[in-house]
Image 1: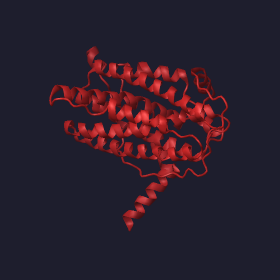
Image 2: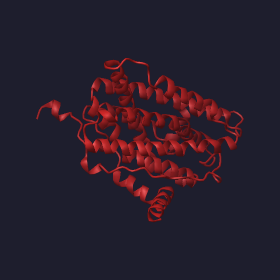
Image 3: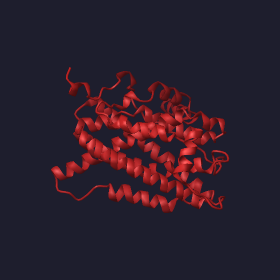
Image 4: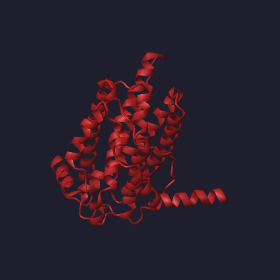
Length: 306
């Protein structure tokens, strides 16, 4: 076998599972502002998900609906349709947290307006002539989503195993939202990468868009954490620094800096395939026990029997 063949991405077939959207719902009435007790920094750093994901995942869905006509593989098409359904539900579930934060005195609107502009305008559709230019912009966005999904899967795997949050008494409803979402990110972790490989697969584009996505995520996340800490009505001098993030990672209430850095060369390896990371079995097991997912399944069965 040649070295080139040996470096081709190799999916782990046993990690594949058919995807379906779960119509979950959550009640936030009893969730406190600092849902990680006595740790506003960890709370707000994770809360940045609620700022980024509604607009970001609506953008995923919009782009993928445009790329569907380019898919020539029927199983991949089914996976992408399942992915679209799951991402739409993720966007809705996180969006519903924002009014609760506002009721607790932390209005996220100034930040979410900027995020909406980013995805709808900067990364949105452009007036381009049909042909190469329009296809280039579509493929760039498909590659960006693949890079972003590497990190959503990383975060999903982390939160499924973040036992320190349980030990510290984190709010169970918020934990269920994060773990339901994280489990589905692990469940569909290969779809974005396989779609990119199917419609393009250029390693140069993969590396370039990874650099763009990683830089943007770090920038947006630290701005979001600072926004929450500075506007938290219960904090006199709320701050968010990279040192705080490093220390929280060492304590286990946030992903560790080392684990995040080690994820970079894995994605940039020519042999990388997302199925080689995380565990579908663990994700599916959580989804079978998640209070929100179980309730959604029962409601679906009840509607079907009616």
